[in-house]
Every structure is written in C-alpha cells, then in structure tokens.
Image 1 (cartoon, one colour):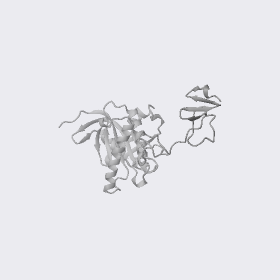
Image 2 (cartoon, helix red, strand yellow):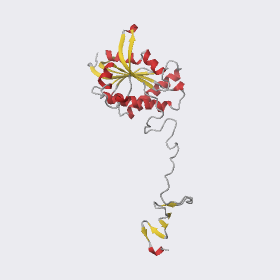
Image 3 (cartoon, one colour):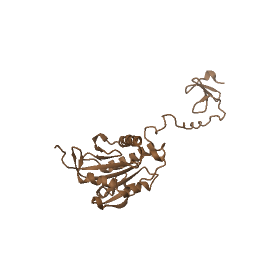
Image 4 (tube, helix red, strand yellow):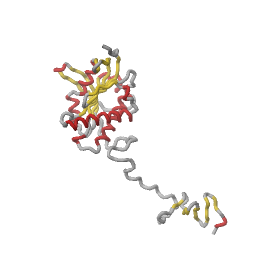
Length: 265
C-alpha cells in the first residue's frame, strides 16, 4: 500500500446547509453550485486550488493544502472571497435556493491514503464543521452566507498574531463536546457581518450581462459652456463651439490651438 508520509498541513472543511431537504435535482444543482463557488473564491483570492488535495463529500469538501502554505493570508483571502462569491451567487435567488456554508479550519499531521485522508486533524476539522453549535450559529444568522470555526491551535498561532486581515475579525470561544463520538475540543467561531454590497469582482454579477447596468451621469460642462447648448453641438475646454476641426469664440476662428487672423472679426 503506497501512502504519503505524515506532513503537518492546513486543512479546510466546508459543508452546505439544508442539502438533505432538497430533491435529487436540487442536490445535484447544489453540488455543481458549490464547486463553482469554491473555484471562484480561489481564483479571486489568487489561491491555486489545483495544488489542494481534495476529498469530495457531495454537499461538502475536505481539502488538505500544500506544506508551506502561508496560513494567515490563505485563511483571510479564502474566507473573504468565499463570502463574496456566495453573495453574488445568492443575490438573485430566494431563500430556498441559496447556498450557505459552514467552514472549518485546522492543522496537523495528515497522510493521504488510497481512499482518503488519515490523521486526527482530518477527523477533527470535520467534527468541528459538523458540530451542532456551528450548525446553530449559521441558522441563527439567516442574513449571513457562511460561518467560520477555527481550532484552538489556528486561533493561537495565526488569528491572535493579528496579521493580514485577520485582526479585524471577531471570534467567540466555544467548547465542542460530543461524548457519543468521544470528541472534545475548544474552538473559535466567526460570523461575517452580512454586507449590503461586497466589493465587486471583475466578472459581471450573476443575472446581469456586461453593459446592462445604468450608465453613469455625463460629466459636468466645462467652465464657460452655455446651458442652452444646441443638441449635437460640441465644445472645447474653453467653451468654444466646435464645427468639424474648427472652434469659434470671442470673435476669433481657431484651427486647433492657433488663431487664424484672416478670419478675425
């Protein structure tokens, strides 16, 4: 059996809300939407998703990131861009079709086996993501598109250091306790504030083609321009009327920037 050696790696687990309540077509659509949203978040966050080892889970995903990943930048950029991607995806949809996610982040020694990942860290990050308190936090914030839970080690080693954009995020300490599964852990929960309009990406918003937005107001007239300018009439910066390549004003006729005295009045 050929398996990888254990390496300490960052691991991210995501899962979608209300998957089981959808019919087959709805579940397939959610799977497709989830992958598109994750790809868009990574592309906009300049994260190479092709380097991630991923285990698909239908309505979720478990990803193991490459050794040497810059953790503060990766967590910050991924979660920020994921929240934006969810916003743009969900904006034209009613609540029944929105995609909302629970996201968990942990780190530890992980091995890649023949049929998935092995190691306590891989199990722990999924337990964190699927914990009832984390599920309830998402349910308690219907206007938010995601909730983030990070392990004690990620919080103390990365979040508390206050690097990148993480110092602005508010976290609440929670105790995860699942006696039936023998799982006990301290973790930190973050619920992004629902934004009225996250920063737009270079792509058009879903449901709108390029060029269909309202055109901006025309620029103000230059000083000296007449309020009763005739339709179709053009004027230069000094307010002189332009006919073809000739401008007039103050009794002079100008070709470009030069006064031609032959036409002086």
